[in-house]
Length: 225
Image 1 (cartoon, rainbow, N blue to C red):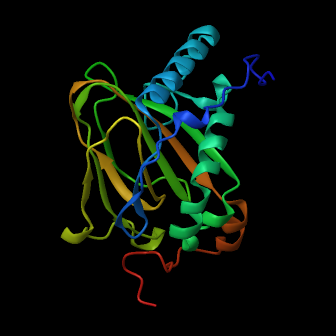
Image 2 (cartoon, rainbow, N blue to C red):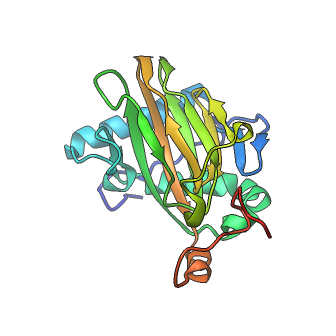
């Protein structure tokens, strides 16, 4: 079957998925062994082939100059497959963020290197849950630093020492975190790091959360009940 971009739909085989167990680092922060090294290389090869064939040069987001939107190269179906694989974790660990109701996503590849994006400043994602999957390759630095979940009302409040979580990416390992988990990426020191980022979203959750202005949410680190 062909995708809307003219490519045969790409789907990972069952053997491409890791059989490891997830690790809960904090409420709303999980490490998930998701893909085998061979599957990571297969995904990267598909991205490169499609990006080259379509001559896609636009940056993937306002925060990144290097990478590609997966929808532009016909790989949204791959993210749907990953999302389906992660559905039990989304339901179990992100009930307050609409995890059981995820129904669409905004997904792209990011590339860190000395001639690419070198770091990323403090921000939150426009997602209910973010999937951050490292695909490779050889690198040091570019750690993901999580700084605590906050609602819009409290986004700029102080970071407690207990909220800081530093994650060294490993190819095939995914980080699942609440979209409103504040975070940054430290400078890359060597090599190239390529990650698949999927902002997982719930239409139902967003409709329920709409209001006249910011208010604290139960998942916020400063929520007082």
